[in-house]
Structure formats: structure tokens, C-alpha cells
Length: 369
Ligand SMILES: Cc1ncc(COP(=O)(O)O)c(C=O)c1O
Image 1 (cartoon, rainbow, N blue to C red):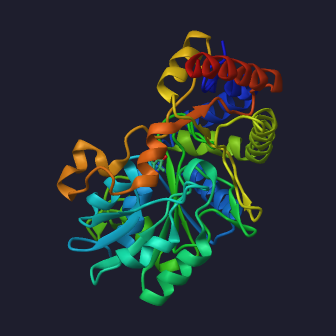
Image 2: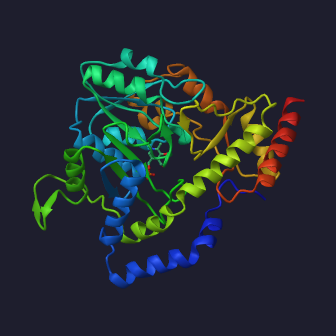
Image 3: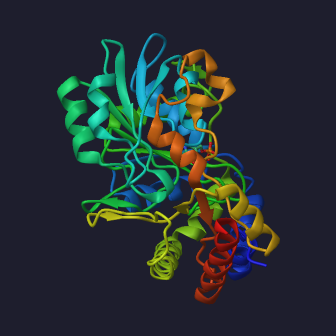
């Protein structure tokens, strides 16, 4: 049996450190924010190469607060992609703005910068690229378009802790970078968690206020805020994990290279990261036409897989009122039909990756026959 994800394997290695960190928080009774969260904010901003980090209770909250801090609200439009987790669009809706979707590039699966300018209207206020699967979007042309049109850039870096574009870390290129620490992420908390990073002290101050009921001091509410604070226990767990994130990322990259070699002569499209990008492989997806049948056959062979994502956001019932139709985003829609995510995590052994590819070969031979 090879599960798609194995969170217990990581805990087994870290148990004494994690248990001690959690006990420390319980002993101190600093359950919300507190010193562990403050220490994590410092560590994570260094890791991202930025000056400020606001620790939050989810990646969705990070996107929501980034939009609010940038002054985006009712009547505004935010250009993003539909090949993403629904949270990207949901956060835009929470702010009162309207998500406007552009298609992705067929080779990198991230926002196609060539399509952005045609989507800009007088209502457009921001561009929100998603670093899908751990590969950063093509940031140079995105930043160039944003600067020319006076738009804010918010990076959805929920899947891309430590990813790089031309030597710069995910979250450090746009005005704000938003991360998720959902347990299955490359850097995962033991519950919900998120963070917004920035080099802009005004945006950071605004996000700090908004996450804690808009309080400047106790019971002094200067803006209408939210309860988006990070738990002390999550800060403590994440501090432990910060010592390991680089090793885990390199292990993921090694597994991805192994899959690349094993699949080199196959007919599947594989991730094609440009040379100037450090892909951190939150997901290793391949494209195959008979995906659903192959996924079932792999399941029967004891191999867990995932689909990220089977129905793009613009075709979800929840977003029907935006008025999109099938064929509006042809690359995104084709990927949604063909994507299959293979198991990838630091503890996956090379022989297990080989086993996955053997089972994949067998399953697709049967389907092709
Ligand atoms: C691309 C993307 N954006 C946003 C989110 C939202 O993060 P969270 O689940 O921490 O709210 C996620 C994670 O699930 C995600 O994958």
C-alpha cells in the first residue's frame, strides 16, 4: 500500500520535539498568538526573504486580509485563475470584489500573462496569480503589467513554501504573499494555519490590525476586524518544522526527479518547470486522457492518487452567477479532465516511486487495450 499522503510518517520522526513544543504552549497557557507565534513570524519572514509576516488561522484568511489591506472591495475586479483550490476565488468574493478568470499556460499550468491585459477593465484593482502545485507563476510579466496599469499583485503561495523564481522566494515578489499551513501542505500545522508576508510596513500593520478585531490596544477597535489569529500550538509546531522544511523540500525534489526519469519515455505530460524556477512539488501531477479509469486501477493496486482539481472554479455551481460557460477556459478545462497527482512526500522511498510508475504503466496498458 502506498498512500497519497502519509502525515503520520513525519510525526513519527518529530514526536519528541513536537510533543515538547505543544506541552510548552499548554504549560504557558499562551493559546492564541503569544511568543511561539511571534517567533514563527520572524523565522518565516526570513525564510521568504521579506520584512514582515502576519500569522493567521488559514491561507484563506491570508488572501482575504491581503485584499482588504490593499483596499479592494465591492465593485472591484481581481484577475486570477480558475485552475486552483476554491479558496482563491472565495477570498476575492469575501472582500466584495469579483473574480475574473484567465486561462493558464499549457506547459507550466500557471497564469498565462499573455491573457491578462485583455481582462483588465476600469474596475480591475489586482492580479492574483496562483503558484500551482509548488511552481511559481511567471512573475516578471505579471509585475510589469501590474505596474503599467497601477494594479496590486497578491501571490497565492498556499502550495509553494520555499519555491523560487529567478532566485526570489514565493511571496516576496508581489505586494503580499499568502501561505496556507493546512496539515497536508509542504509546511503543515497540526490544524488550520496561514500567513501573509510582505515588504510593505503599511500593509503589514493593516493585516495585523484586521486579524485581531481591528484592535490597536485592548478594546480599542480602530477598524472593523476579524478573529483570524494563529493558535499558539500551531506556532509552536511550525517553529519545530521550520528546522526541517529545506530538507523535506529537497527530498520532494529528489522524488520528482526520480518520477521524471522513470516517466521520461512515457506518453504523459509531466511538470515542466522553467530553469529559473525552483519547483517545490507540493503536488506531482501528470496529464493522461483515460485518467478516471487509471486512477481506479491504481486504487485497486493499493496506490493512492489525487486530482488537483477535477472541476475548475469557473464551472462550479457556487460560482454560476459569474456567468462562465464550458469552453471559456480551454486549457484549464482540459487539465481538469486529465490531471492525476501521484504520491509525493519527503518519506516516500525511491523504490515506492518506482512501484507507482510500474502500476501506472500496467493500468494504462489495460486502458489502452
Ligand atoms: C491554492 C490555494 N489557495 C488557498 C488555499 C487556502 O488555504 P487554507 O486551506 O489554509 O484556507 C489553499 C489550500 O487549501 C490552496 O491550495
